[in-house]
Length: 150
Image (cartoon, rainbow, N blue to C red; front, side):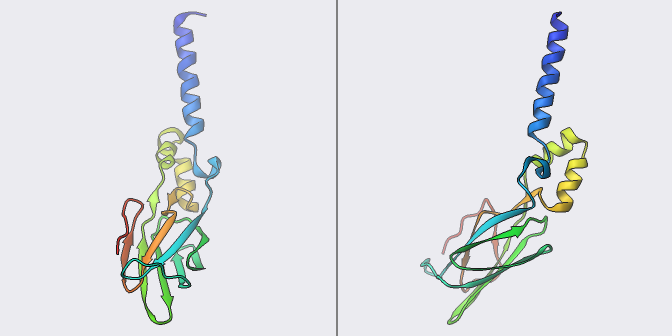
């Protein structure tokens, strides 16, 4: 085999590996749902157990009692969370939906078809795995890059 043929074969192999590893979320298995943990805190930072929380996006509504977890359907829309407990002011937050990195691989390597599929079924997006709600605070903004403080 000539050097130019070996070089072409190597480039094609690298391209195939990249295409296979940056595939759409639907194919790579991250799926259309994700588990989210919710914890609630008082204004002084102490845990508040037993708050009833409702999580809503355009794909559905889920309930959890804190501390606890629920599996939600991913969406490109933010997740609205409202937590209530008798005797304590409610807490609410808008949890930011972020585009996952493999969405860009879809666009570059898949010609956009995988990106359209993943956008439509929600698998291209992710919420933070842990949501911290401070009771008594309304309209908190929660993002994977933010840190919650009392």
